[in-house]
Structure formats: structure tokens, C-alpha cells
Image (cartoon, rainbow, N blue to C red; front, side, top):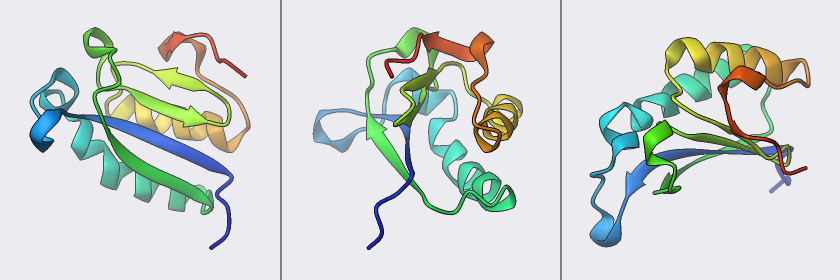
Amino acid sequence: MKKPDRVILVCCSYRQGNDAKGKCQKKGGPGLLPLLEEGLADRGLDNVLISSTGCLNACDRGPILAVYPEGYWYGEVDEDRLDEILDALAEGKSVPQYLVAPASV
């Protein structure tokens, strides 16, 4: 297995007992996963690991998408924002207006 260039985490609000009950789940977090896979492939970003996560504790800004190693945490991600985020990633940039917090890297 080749080490991925990036890891993208998508909050799907899984809680204890594997229940998806939080805001990210209710606001469409799980639905971002196939869009993310397709969008990465369309842009030739093929060495990226995508993972759904438990609660990332930023519920008021969900769905949350975290990109590493850059350390970008994006909030209120929907299909339109996802396209902009992926376009920026393909160019090695961020979309500052959607960041929940400054990048840690």
C-alpha cells in the first residue's frame, strides 16, 4: 500500500454505539463521501484517503471536512462548497472563507 498524499476526514456524527445522530449526519455529511470520491477522481487527485469519522466536535459548523497534512478544517460543506474546495486543493490552495479555523500546518 502506498502512503496517501492527503487524508480527508468527513464528519458523519458517529457516536457511542455507532449511532449517527449529530448535525453533520443530519446536514448531509455521509452524502459528501461519494461526491468527494468522484470529485477527486475528476481532478486527478488519486492518492487521497477518504474516511468518515465520528463527531469532530464542531457541530455548529457541520458538516465538517478536514484535510491533512494541510490541516484545513472546512465548515458547512455542501456540494457547491465541496467543488470549490477540491478545485483549490488541486491548485495547492485553500478556500479561506470556508475554513472553521486557521490551518495548523
